[in-house]
Image (cartoon, rainbow over all chains, first blue to last red; front, side, top):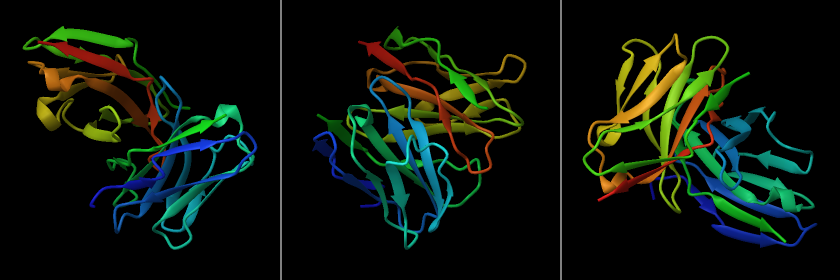
Length: 115
Length: 113
C-alpha cells in the first residue's frame, strides 16, 4: 500500500511484559515521528527520526521507552516492563522531507492495552 | 513552549448549515498551524495548513481556516456541512525546527441530517 502501515493493530500485554510496535513509513519519506494518544486526548509527541538519526526523543516518558530506525525506513518503538499507564494508541507518522511546515501522513495506530 | 486549546469538546450542526471549530494557540516565534481530521479506526488525515501569507487558507473537502495573529486563533470553517463531515478534528501548532506538532485535545463534530 501507499500509506503508513503499523503493526500490530491491537496489542494486549500483561503488566511487566515487553512489547515492540512496528511502523512502515511511506517509501522515501525522510522524517518519521512517533506519537502517543491517550483516550479522549490529542496525540502527544514521543520521538523524531530524520533517516536513521534520532534527533529528538524529548517526549519519551521514561527510559522504558526506546525507538530505533536502523536503516532509515522501518521503525520500531519498544516499551519494556509495560505499566497500565502505557495503555494508549501509538501513532506513527512520516513526511517526505524535513521542512517544519510539511504535512504528516499518519498510520492507523497500534492500540496497546496493558492489563 | 507550544500549546493549543480547542474550547469545545463537541460541535453539533445540522446538515447544510455552516460549521466552525475553534482553535487558539501559543508558540514562540512564527507559528505553523495545521488541522487534521480523524475518522473512526483510521489515522489522522491532513486538512490544511497555514505557513505565511494570506490569512485565509483553503484545504481539502471544502474546509478553510482563518489565521488571526492578534487573537492567536486558527478557526476551521465550512460553509455548508455534510453528514460525512462527522469526525474528530484536531488543531496543531509548531514553531519547532523538527516540525514537532503540539495537538489540541480534539473537537468531535456531529452533523445531523
